[in-house]
Image 1 (tube, rainbow, N blue to C red):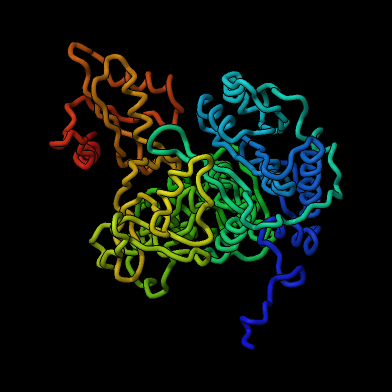
Image 2: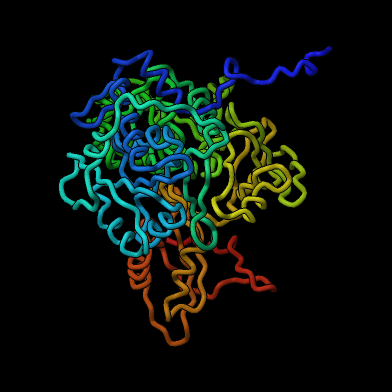
Amino acid sequence: MNIYQQHLDPVVANYESLSPLSFLKRTAEVYPNKLAMVHGAVRRTWSETYTRCRQLASALSRRGIGVGDTVSIICPNLPEHFEAHFGVPMVGAILNSINTRLDAATVAFILQHAEAKLLITERELTPIVKQALALMDNPPPVIDIDDPSFAGGEWLGEMTYEQFIAQGDPEFVWSNPANEWDAISLNYTSGTTGDPKGVVYHHRGAYLNAVSNALSWGMPNHAKYLWTLPMFHCNGWCFPWTIAAIAGVSVCLRHVRADKIVDLIAEEKVDHFCGAPIVLSMIAGIPPEAKARLTHPVKVMTAGAPPPAAVIQSMEEMNFSVTHVYGLTETYGPCVVSEWNDDWNSCSTEEKARLKARQGVRVPMQEGLMVAHPDTLEPVPQDGQTMGEVFMRGNIVMKGYLKNPKTTEASFEGGWFHSGDLAVWHPDGYIEIKDRSKDIIISGGENISSIELEDTLYRHPQIQDVAVVAKHDEKWGEVPCAFIKLVEGATLTEEEVIEYCRQNMARFKVPKKVIFVDLPRTSTGKVQKFILRQWANNAS
């Protein structure tokens, strides 16, 4: 009888479903008195954080929220947001963290589409949240976070977050999900057409990507992590769960401002943070006296458009080590890392920056990565020149899109996840993004759909034809540039177009440049966006 004939099936003694919730329990048991959370005067240990998460879970359970229910949160990077990443899934519910920069109509759509049973929010967000709730037929009940770091705003709910969790049992008994494939969170991504899509993560993927973060970045136990990256963005790239795994310290940051970042790095001895290239540019631009305060090594993980070489050089001169990563909402955040090779240490500063700007190779917990022909899935030559689409597969690819089986099936066709991003494959196995077939503009780390902007602009009565492309920007990486043809006799100005956009979309999506021109089209009527990109980047 060989080993496969013995029917050695998993049993309780040798199998447990993977869930990042187990990281929190272990760390609270092993390091109960280690610092876990810093937010102004608030300093909590891992034992205290674990207790608050259990209270949140218990309070949710007593309200009848459980397996399969969605709890939404729209909130800055506060301790309560971190706690929701554990307390919500402890009862089998699904955390839906909403982008704080969205307009009210989009927030309302997300709450409706996600079927949120409860919304946790904070007073700074009440103007948008109040409008969003007013747009809904059956808005969810609201719990308000009363944070002392923000003065003003109004409460929209029946009680505060502190009052809510006070109803919960600090000894609440919870367990990992029976099935690690169960959903843990729901994140909405900007689609190229129509409404945003709901991306569903499972416990297994969240667990593995949390570990992958630590491995690919070489994070030690008790690392001090500054929350410059929004927790709403792919669940903060799964870093709430990573920080629990390594018994690290979460240093909260309400607003991403260079002076505050420097203060916290210096005062709290922060040694790791993530962010878009714009964050690096902000830090690189601080005055010399501020730079003098930064005396210890700091690791930075950045994604989006590659940081300019001058910014990378400036950061490294300040003893900041920059790691460039790439991923999508559909891959739990970073699934590709520009792994540094010590053989490159002797390269010039410019060459190092060029190498670091490449997207890289698959992270430890990602099973497959390739650049291939989008129709045949035949890998392209690794010559650094032949273009193809980026494909991924493995445990850190989403479950699928919520209520959208057709799009889910299409995105997984051929056994690979189709990213829609175009890249070349270098001889050393590193990929480098060259274009985005989905026409998504990445500005300051935020995804902006060009088609969404075009649809909004088309609604203006004086606009006849429009196309939006990415324009390179030293500060934001990319910004939207709108090409517009007016109806005959119209006299619309650039300033009027920009003001119209401000009234009809989130501020970060507003085009930074408007050019009036007849759009170049192919014989079949398709806009030649590659020409528009050239025009945009040649425009002042």
